[in-house]
Image 1 (cartoon, rainbow, N blue to C red):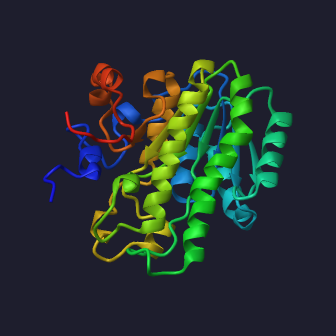
Image 2: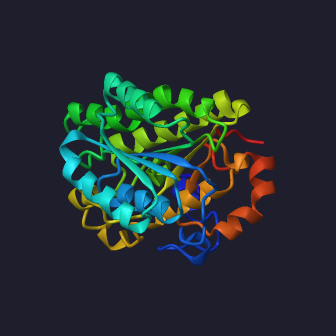
Length: 302
């Protein structure tokens, strides 16, 4: 058996220093955003999505569009009210959306376009893990389909309908998908077949976006939020992995704000982690560009 380090280990340790909660360098209160900045967050009603919404509010976003499933309307409203308290000058609007439906996502894009003159940043946080199934001949095939409908088809539909709005913007033109280092996992006690493969496909889709629209100024990245004890994680995580769910729910939002403060096209198409130390990440800029790191590839011998 190969002694090569696992991809998930390489990804987790890309920076020597790792963080479980936002550092001063990531504090949205001091990482003020350029004005005006209009941000759409899909999957904003709870957990990591709520943290992302509040991070952008604290950092001074001009307009915040919050979207979630129709069944999450009450929770989404609470997130909106908290964002207004954090930033009394912010303009907020809530929308219902089903990212597995092209018609629903198209309608959301049209409503956002009618509400604001330009859209600068899209953050797609919606995701679904499904039950943990470790072998292909086990579990229910419909669960596999449901996971792909949200994580892959949903990402495609959001990109399909919102990339045109980002291209029209003269601002950040940034597409952020909340991904996962599960994309790097192939075995072990959390190698959930549907989730891991779907997150690999999502990260690859982000690479496609960077190739197809990078020359038009669109920045597309996937961001691993850390190991967070979200509502979904609490329902599906095996007991053996629960001790590792210790990363702060607000870490991903702080990292997204850091990404948005100053456009970093050298990160285009890459799978990043909110747990990485950003100072060390910046120091690796030349290495990342020269070796085209943080993307998936195909290995052959020298």
